[in-house]
Length: 74
Image (cartoon, rainbow, N blue to C red):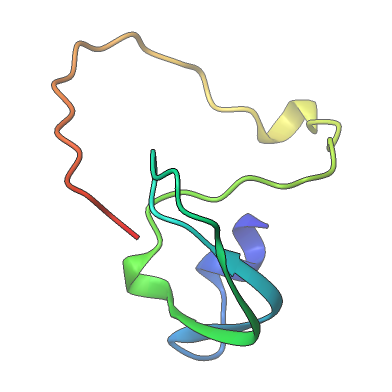
């Protein structure tokens, strides 16, 4: 997934069979056959399939304190 996001040949991804919902909303998700997502707007991504990590690609983790403010993203 990181290869797709970091080494994409264009500035956007076209996704198929998309459902979109506001975080924390109780409304039904909006569905679309296709959606274009600008790579610059992606904050994080999660794979639906578990992938075994490669030991040589691991990055040592350093604990840091952070303040996170989350606006109402869609």
